[in-house]
Length: 148
Image (cartoon, rainbow, N blue to C red; front, side, top):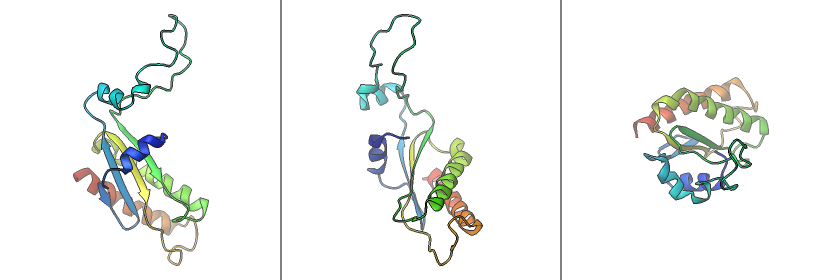
């Protein structure tokens, strides 16, 4: 997910699961593409209109109905000051989503960091201890999100 409107729509829902440092939000993908196009009428057709047959469309960025899991992650700078830490956490979030994608409901998912990891416990920005702590917490988080 990269569209601001998608993030706003998902974050407007209550969190589906929370842990000490993370929260997961979800919006159902819906049963069909027509519902998606009702919510996003601008994406219902290409901006080029009826193109000549055989010609490639100029605008092929049309959204499809989310019949799979679409992930967005939010790791704010106020909770993870160093970019190394933010990148590590985003990678952990993507990896956890990849492990659990087949067991989660289709739709838009957003995982956000809601509290900082204590720097005294994890002095290195990309330590193995931080990686393991984030991995363990995300596993529990997605396990609870699956059941909710």
